[in-house]
Every structure is written in structure tokens, then in C-alpha cells.
Image (cartoon, rainbow, N blue to C red; front, side):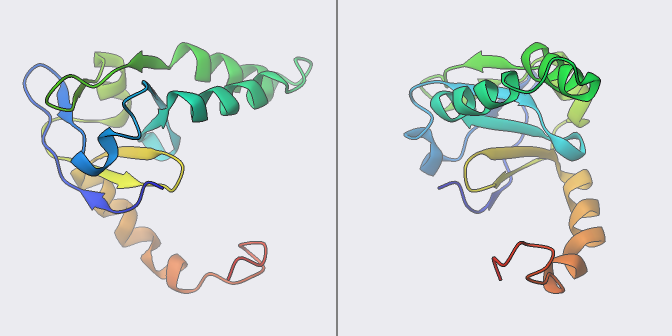
Length: 143
């Protein structure tokens, strides 16, 4: 599982060092795609394959489903971390997520999210109360 919050910096070449504790799980390849809330999502290759197959099975008659599949496929980059655990984020991915230097990598159980540090703090500030007030109704009985 991917858990925790980390604060790596983006270097001048657009490279980001993955937290050491996740490198083994991502050693077989990883897929970087545009995530929700203008973050990036980083999936182990096998996990992404399952997601992509589920998305591709959606009805092609549904314009929203078509748009999602197109966005997912076109906005995904396959990579392998280098010997130092770095991945290179494309200019398009950096633009989409508003990444400059200060970044936050968070675990989201099945995948990682990469956020601009200020955007993450803004998100946390806006949603922290929602987390503390979550109910079984909104979470389908999880809590």
C-alpha cells in the first residue's frame, strides 16, 4: 500500500525523486497520468493496466466515457525510475499539476499522487473538516 506524505523537490530537468519506501513496488514500471484536482497519479504498471481495461470497457456511446478514456490514454506516460529513484515529469504533466520546485507526494493506497506543495496545502485546508466529519453514508459504510 502507498501511504504517507513526502516533500521531494523537482529539479531543473523536471525530475522528481520517489520516496525510497515505494521504489520496490514501482520497480516493474510505473504509469504517470493526470489525476483529479490537478494532481498527477502514479500507478504501478500492473495496477494501471487494470484501471485502463476497466475504463476501456465503458460504453463508447457515452461522450463522457469517451472523453475520459481519451484523456487517460493520451495523458499517460510509462516510465522506470533511474538508479537514484528519479522519474522525469513531462512538461505537460508539470503544467497540468502546476508543479515548479516544491512538491508533495502522497500515498493514496493503490497509487501515489504528486501535488504542487501550495496546491496541496490549499486542498488540505479546504477539506480537512470534511475528513473529520465523514460519515458512513458518504463513504458507503467504510467508517
